[in-house]
Length: 218
Image (cartoon, rainbow, N blue to C red; front, top):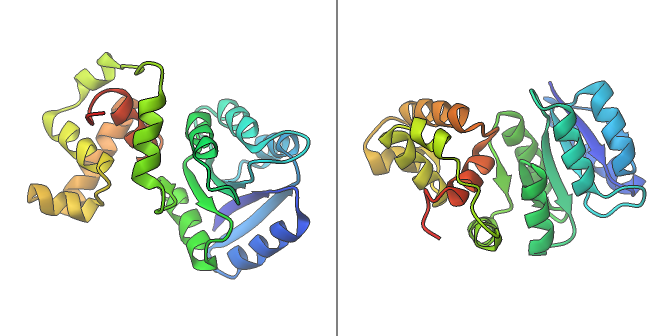
């Protein structure tokens, strides 16, 4: 079972999410919080695998809470899915900078929410498809200066850099395999080793790293 915590200041939203997620059969909602500060305490005690996090809440916003939760569990942090009504770049940028693994809008279909939780639990980053490439490229462009990680980049093989570059262009594992004429399982193996070398938790953070370190042209 995927252990999930819901964080939203509206009880009706949390109740709706609980019903949707627990009907999936492989997801268990282990906690609910109505503020960012409460979420930090619950995450520390219960260690959920995925946290569905609202952005704007009284008593501590979701992005600040995300930073604290990930810092508290540096070795094995939960995947944070930012769920918001605001389709504004500033919130997406804030989510990425805070270390969130995904972003989705509250008006998504129930099956999209379930799919997002499953993807994050399996280590796949997710940004709402309507904003994916625009947001990530703009996020990279707005950085004052790239945080170049020459040591990590030097450890990557040419094939690993090639695969990260294709991932950052928005290609799936299957599409990358087709592009390079290799098996999907081989793509996964190369990508897994590359993520370990650069210290990325998931695919989304790998893409952000690629933009920050010049693997993808700005």
